[in-house]
Length: 338
Image 1: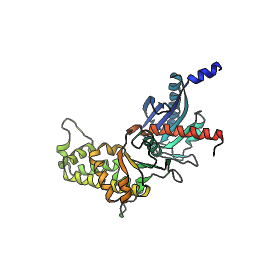
Image 2: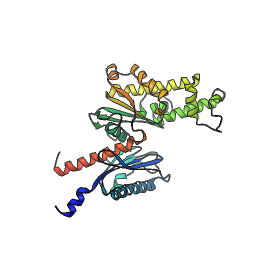
Image 3: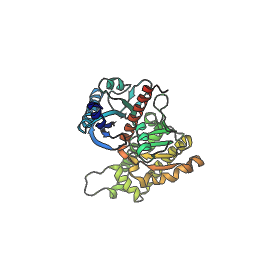
Image 4: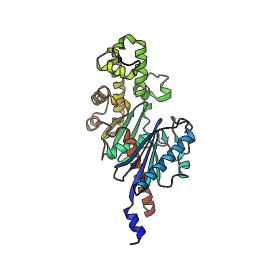
């Protein structure tokens, strides 16, 4: 055996993950088995466009350097973005990043990144991560419902992620859940307008501003200001009637949305993640029963509703899984497999 071959046999292999959010970018180095070796989190440059692109490239080089410092090599990288990644055109639409509307992300990255690269939506990353190392480990029919500032879903059927014609499958915030049309629906969709974390914040703020005396006892005395959502949730837990009514309204919208997904897709598991479910007593536990009222009975009995096991790191694990998949496709291409 040649000396160069012996050195290469000792070389460690790593996979990279970059989770580009609206305000933060998380990056990590993983072993092929899914063990993290390095992690970082930085703020997204608010100048957007080219500056964010350069930031992504810089983080890639950082991962490459981290792999080398561990006597290893970065074999492939997965990147997820908060928006739509059109699988046919390669164009990216990320509304929270300035200048990233029909942005040719892959074209630019190919000039800088030499290893195999997979670019996916955050919705895809969530469902890949949770089905690989999280709450839906080993399952092939999975929905990941993210309820944070907005609402979106990653959908997996028979082990394959569903993208749709233009990677818009999973834009479930646009589900119509009532007959009367509110002008807010035209911006984000009915489900998102009524039941997202952003909706909770908007509705809680309006309720507290309209009835300040009803909520004054729930504000912290040692703080000048307190987040309206925290005040509202505290009031709801204490049985304040207006707060309880609003919580139940959001629960009902969530139940209808989840029931629709269960009835249409018949998943084994629905994983619930995002900021809203950080109050599981208010929004997760009631949902586990309420959705059954609306869902197809057999599908409702067979599905499990679970909280995300990976939390904020679900997307990173999903990026690693995407990196593994792109490596598999390259290997199949070299073998001449169809």
